[in-house]
Length: 274
Image 1 (cartoon, one colour):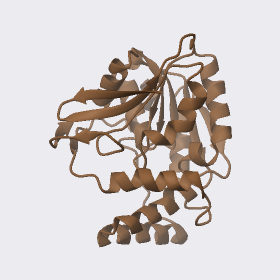
Image 2 (tube, helix red, strand yellow):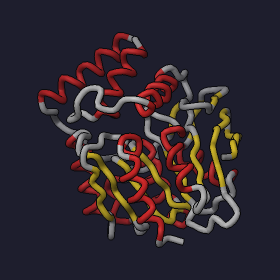
Image 3 (tube, rainbow, N blue to C red):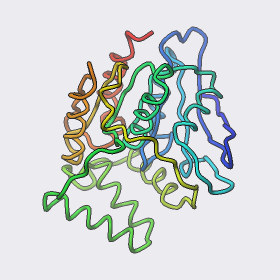
Image 4 (cartoon, one colour):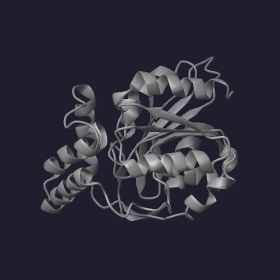
């Protein structure tokens, strides 16, 4: 897997890219969640590189990407720069959580560059937020807010692993071993990142979902926040031809705790998109 350093205004984005001879499948670009970095996709990069050109990069404030000076920037422009550096004119975008939001914004901004969308529990700009949480979930959210207010990054990291990796409806510590160690490493970097500037917001995507024409797969885990599961179902209804993928017993990051099921579904989705 080749390392790329993509020069942007006041930033150097660090990416991994591979395009093997004979890899004739549709290119895949992986966009990480806000509690992770490009390493959350390391298993998928290895699995799909033999048949597909693959790319994953660290956004500003994540992983190895470094920002020399805080300023305004656009997430979608950073995506295009990473793709251009890798020689990818177009690709299927695979985005989890905040990565899904960027994928949606990119598909609406330049639809010809986006051959398909795989949206994993995506954030959506302009989407309605829940008015209230069930008591058990409210307790977890309050614990997260208290940890953030305390300024204790290690404590906050553990609480966020409980929410986003185990899943709010899962048992505490449900996911262990390398997956948990990876989460704590990735999110620990993000929690300690300095000021990287202000991301410019594109027009809200929620009210423009019916404009999307790309083949779309929307995936979510049954242990994730209920309102996020409802949002995913609404995306399936709003995007023409979108397919649902419900991963039973998975949390917010299903490629980490149910990698075989996730990879099989992704392979089936991209198999017919040459």
